[in-house]
Image 1: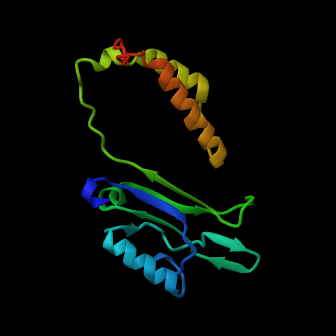
Image 2: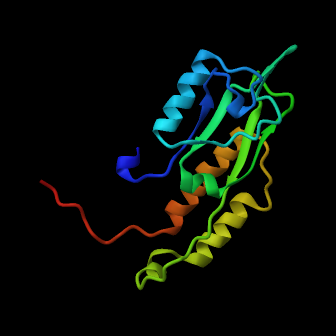
Length: 161
């Protein structure tokens, strides 16, 4: 991963316990994961306050979020969202923010119809606040569609071989 000079986030149900991400004990899987993460220079993002997994009286911190250094500095508001979900795992929420410097390129104005894009986004989304991941996925799919509609196709034809 580092050889390609990429910044990444890895998140999932690792079924491993370690004090590094909130568990009161460290198991064998946890030790292996900590070694793996150290080799790849990954940082644990978990806030260690709320269990990520709950079933009846069993609670644990087995869902882990990892990130490389640059992304770690950009992750904000990492938290576990508890509630009545159709899974034993709680939702994990975080924001990724960074100061993005927009480069002004000569051709950019001709690529995006900003007014059309803004209008289509307002129609598609309005003032939506999303707590349900399935609604979030639908929203991102809709956003992708609106981007495709708002950016005209290039004039170059692909050669036919």
